[in-house]
Length: 256
Image (cartoon, rainbow, N blue to C red):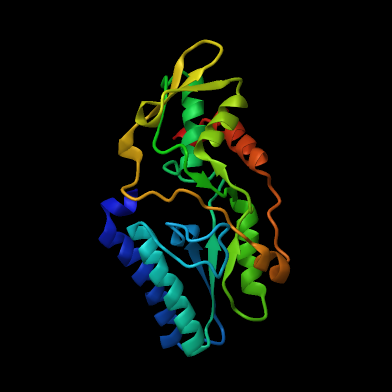
């Protein structure tokens, strides 16, 4: 949602920032020395045209961020073909971990759980909890980035777990790891998640956290990366949530 509030900054950073780096390589005659990785995103698929999404799936960006990233994607391909620069697009599906920014949904969930357990708040407020995401461990994905840059030829690759989970499921799994059985009542913005044991209302929905245009279902197909790069994700969905819950419900540092 942030890119809707700062569209010009988003374009300057994600679109023209990529162009400026590629121009620096070209203007300094580093085409044969530099290897360039562009952190692309599954948000390019936006209003998805097919499921699962692979390197050949048509793009349909639905946010200023995704539109800026689409420019970056194509300018990387253009400079690779026009100037023979070793430049790769990594189309990464959602990936997180204990260093994930606090405004990202999976981290918001585990941080919120920690605050509830410590009595700092009595609720977690979310947006669209029925959107589906392909979520992996950032550590696994960094290895994939590295593998792209070690390849003989530059190319573009999807990195994903090839499975999808709803935000609702992320909440249920995370809270379940600390003894909360979440029971849902109501629908839409009036839906509330209760502690089934005590009846305490814990999860609330606020439409201010909805995007103007939502991305509903993201599910990657990383066959190309698995076959060519020998890459595969090592961390399961439940293990990733467990790692984040453990960190964010026990670490003081994570809340500073």
